[in-house]
Amino acid sequence: MCASISWLLPQADMPATMREERSKIVIREVGNQLLLAQRDTISRILPVRQLESDIYVLAFSSDLSFLPEQLVAIASEQFIRAQFPKNYIIEVYQCYDNEVAYSFEINKTIENTIVPCSGRKLPLDCYTIKIQFIEENIAPSQTSYSKMGLLFIAGGALLFLGFRFRESKKETISISKKGVSLGSFNFYPEEHKLMRDNDELVLSKKECELLTLFAQKPNEIIKREELSKKVWEDNGVIVGRSLDTYVSKLRKKLQTDPSIRLTNIHGVGYKLEIR
Image (cartoon, rainbow, N blue to C red; front, side):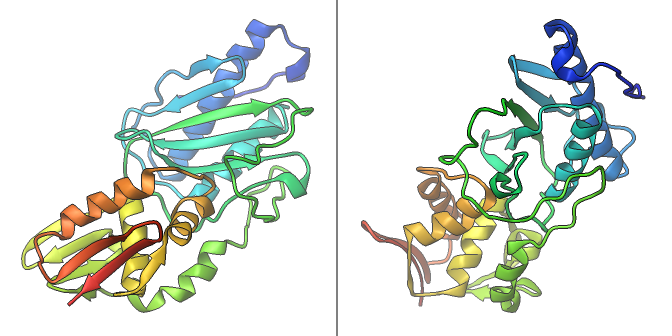
């Protein structure tokens, strides 16, 4: 059971040691509320690690799956209640490859708040959550995040956002509700899997998003910029060579069917060729 949080001193007025310990307790409560939102009363929250003076890492004993907007709302409520700094960045990392699965930035001015597209549940997996508090006189990050201009309302109530993903979902509705035939494979985006005969290949979140884009435009060249933007930048992060890495992973999973080829168009992008 997690202890309730009832502190009288504002965060800024506390001695450094007390502030750091209090921060760990509040961040631990964020983890507790996130598990409770999934009706998980069994999994343990591991000790909160402090990387730097204002950077903390939250981890769990078991895999979990959650909606990103739940994390946004829970963190906002707990941080406001504890009178924490109003500006912070939260990044959710996948344990197995340390890739950012989701991230967002909250700034005290609505214009600078960056809450990227949500609405789809992160698949059951091992995650760590890094929380970085930002001094109010430091400008918000403009290199690691793409600005969305979405409205964020923080007042202790849960957030209800208009998600850009729901707009893009209209484009993929023809392939999201049922399996799509790709050569001898059947692709099920909602279930993150490829089926061939009785063989099932599980896809990671990024592999699934990439293959969805390729399946929408078979035998067409898709520019690198478009792929990177839709799969990484629109999720709140910009990643360099990750595109090539995930395309390579997809290529290996599709290589058993000679009628399908994922081709690199040098200097331009990629094309899913289906004979």
